[in-house]
Amino acid sequence: WLPACLTSPPAAMLSRARFLAVSAVIALAIASIGLATSSAHASRGFAGPVGAGLAMRQHLRTAVTLNQAMVPLLRKSIDMPYTVRHMPLTRVRAEEKQGPEFHKAKVASVEEAAEGGVYTVKVDSPTTLSQYTTPGQFAQIKVGDVKPGFFAMANKPGEDSLEFLIKKVDGAAGDIVGLTAGDELEITDVMGKGFPWANVADNNKYNGGTYVFATGTGFGPIKAMIEEGLFKGRSGLKIYYGARNEEHVPFRQKFEEWFEQGLLGNSEKLPIVPVYSCDGQEKKEKQYVQDVAVIDTGDHIDPKTASAVICGHFDMTNTMKEKLVGELGFPPENILTNF
Image (tube, rainbow, N blue to C red; front, side, top):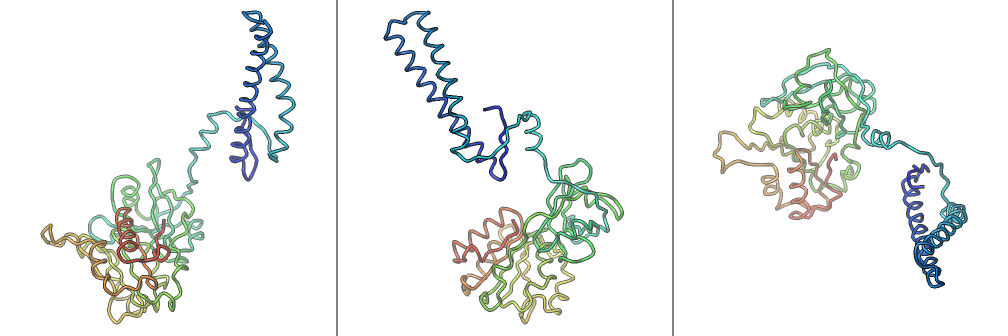
């Protein structure tokens, strides 16, 4: 049984584990019976090589008998409809390594979004575009055989092209921003569920302030949330965006436009708070989103009716979540991320 691959949808793995576990128990029982049989023969004078051979033959006969008797009972007792087939190990390993499917798409445009090698890349991919329904969702993209990268959509769902905010670094990101309109790349289907905005969408219930924390290209999915209208009518909206300096802030030319369209809550003034880590300041004066935000909001937050959205690099996201929960008392379900 051990070399066989048991397939039993929808619980093949569990069934296989149960089957092998019970098989192991039977094997132990057979071994015990064999030992007892050998001991019995020895006690009757079947000692030495001849006695050992007779004991072994008796052991094997017992094992065969138990095997024939127990297999039907075992299959019936664990109620496991299955088929047994042999699968080469190489095939199993190949299936385990199989990644997501990529399909070809064309670049619509590549434009500089901010200093520091930050670009907006628009991609024409009808398949992926049709699957994109929620800000915060993402896809894998690659050029040629280079290892793909994960990139979140920066446009709201329903537009003509997918838009991504990408920083030029080695690997897939650098290859993508090096393309021009009409060039081909490869993209997967949409991944992730996006920001679970439904958790905090009720403006009457969650009226204690909405705090958005973003750094770097993490502002792309926040742009998608803004343009989707998710922050319309929101009380106490405040968006903290971390960048090196003003020239490194993407989409800053859109801030006033969003404000005039009522997409930035019901604030009387622009609620976007830039946090610069290197603006001609001394090192000791550097500021980071996760530090400034907590100091600024700590005195007047009602955590039970407040909500937060975090998007940025992994360390910032984790640090910010820990501070919101541990220092400010936010319920974890009020903190939204897209992974």
